Length: 116
Length: 115
Image (cartoon, rainbow over all chains, first blue to last red; front, side):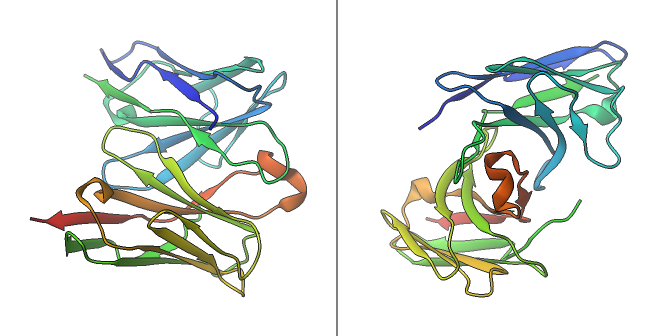
């Protein structure tokens, strides 16, 4: 099946710093990527939809200036958590789609962000 | 955001037992997906369902897309230790938007196997 690579898998940072998370589709071109956030023992909550070459679409309640998304190519989307605070600590997961009919979404392995 | 109602929330079973979990929604979904998530990892797709009434198997796993398009179930037969994890259902609404349509996730079922 399709492979989605997410990096880094774990990051610890100081409060106030910015953290960039990368999501790459390794063997297919992804016109659309999705970014999710997951708190411990909770389900995945969609944060934003990232479209190649255009602005991301953010879900209600997600601050676009806080969570910057860039989808500059068909194989790479990045999520930057700006001026991170402890409440931003969470598990962030991306998924990618080629946009074809009956296409299944494949997920990255996730990034555990811990803000001190 | 909206979530699908998934039950049970957790299950404690013995190895070899069969498992059944389901997912319900108050509105229609046109695609149902079942994922398994291990700790510290992203979800891995188990089964995808595209047609109401469809029954699909993947090894010891069987899933069905409800006729009303508002529910789905997942069965695991003869459970083994590696089945431990969290199982999520997910639904997609808009067929015309193909794979660009976002997923709505269920609340998850945590499966534990008792030695």
